[in-house]
Length: 365
Image (cartoon, rainbow, N blue to C red; front, side, top):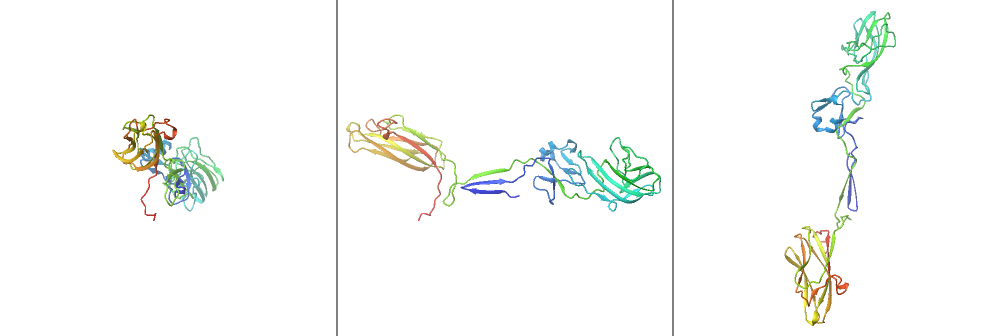
């Protein structure tokens, strides 16, 4: 059976419609070949699963231990067969040892609930003999293995007869004065009859291994220009300046960037300039992989003790795992303001945001 897939808003759900089968389960099947994970069983001969102990350990552990032969599993004929074919006197030869003439025969081998092989049958015929009648089916006499069964003397029409346990007698008429009679019987055999080779109307199949419950896999597509997509939330982090920066130092660092990933740095920088009336400037620099990739300068306009604020952004693709923010030309006369000093509008902070990667295009004509 094909897998089922559905897509919505960039999310693709794939459903694998496997039946949640359990190793060792047996069910009827009418197909010519068993579905995936199953093996057809023969209703008339043993089925051998080679190296089952290694290949199908779940089945090996659950199956009847008497089926084990080395590392192979030998499943007896007829296991799981619900309908057993019957045979009549035109298909199976039924003869006797004392001029027995068969006029009707009905034979049906099957397995009972315990898995034992049994034979149910009805044989009708006549003979001019009065003692010691043995009935042969296809020239073979099958042994009744049940204990406690006994022969019945003076068999008459409709009498149920079971032969002695352990003897090679299928049906025994010890003594009778009738020349025409019939026997119904149902007893356990020591082996599956070799003449019972017809297939049942449906074939049993056995599960080789456990299935998980119906598998559902979800894949997430990145957003494109043509198809709405769903992506995981982008990560972001904000850091603040805790004290005024009056010297040229690396005052802030973002670590653990992913190489090849796109990032944006949002800056809100507060400066105090021209302290004491001296004309002064100060810069904030971005360093990545040892290279200055952007500058954000603050300049005075000649006014004593002026405050400046810079709000800006810069986007870059990471080629290393660290981004540094540094000051240049910082001094006591021109410095970067710390959080909470000189008013909230000049508080300094930076936020780095992870972005979805882009693709080069010529679509914007």
